[in-house]
Length: 263
Image 1 (cartoon, helix red, strand yellow):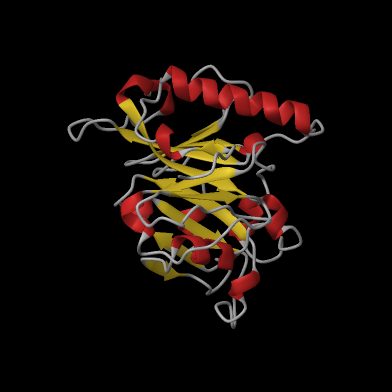
Image 2 (tube, one colour; image 1 turned 90 degrees about the vertical axis):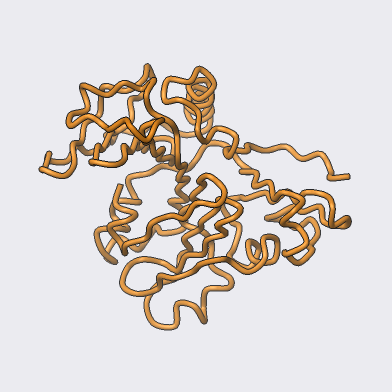
């Protein structure tokens, strides 16, 4: 039997409607946690210039305070909650539906949550000079609630090496028929993920300003780490994570260089 663990599991929120009360309750609870644990910030989220491919605004979202920065593309909508260290991705909830061309026409009831990105800003402090991508990440404040729980289905446990409770992760793998629970903290390192989740299905990055990344497709998990440039993979074992991306199990995250992370 798996040990009882406390933490926040974000996977169950995937595919919920954009106007879901359950999703709104989660965001409201994170806002309360952020307000009670972090000092007030005098900065505001930047609003970028509208282009032909994307529309950006800081309003017209479900009733949340503070409102997220919304970035609308032809195939996806990003809701960037900078004060929460969180970015949510939405797509139409049916194959026949399309996103509107302007944010004011968004119908949240016709959208579904398809991705969750949690940012770990402490990891890349001091890297402001390493490109636009890192500067964008620095706009995010720390996520207010840890640990983040990653639940590995029992069917996938046999493929991953067993491990025990450590400072950064907790797994329950004594029985191969039992699920594994991984707890992610801001200090969790690359080797903690691979020792608990096994070898990734896909990996890349390390060139330019983008850190190395690993994806466990069948688990719906992708992680970008704070290791880039020459010998990024050789030095990557002990680096901390920068972005934790959660998506529907079995899908793949489209990675197209630094622009893929430019929310």
